[in-house]
Image 1 (cartoon, rainbow, N blue to C red):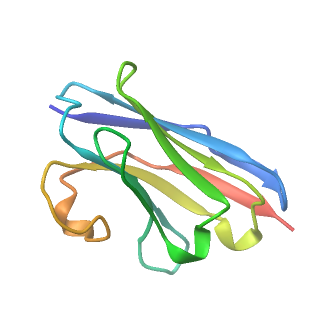
Image 2: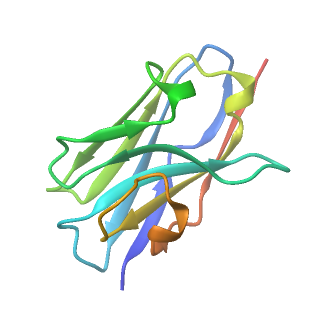
Length: 124
């Protein structure tokens, strides 16, 4: 049973940085795609970033390129999201997710496992 647990959220001022981490336990960590999504109040869940098993392929939401960086450590079964130059509009609950299927990283239903989420609040 795959279990994803996010950590690292919190309150930060605009322009600051946070690093989120997601630990994957209870299931195989191989041959999967790990991703981060976020959901702001009153908005739909949206793709943030994704990374393949080897780390050789990454995708980002266009609006976040250059500020966010996704990485993974397969030895530790973790995937991280480094967030820099944070803006108030980055305020959301951030979710870690994993999929074992091919295809688009952006397609939410393809992700079979989700963490509980971690709150990120950016003050102006």
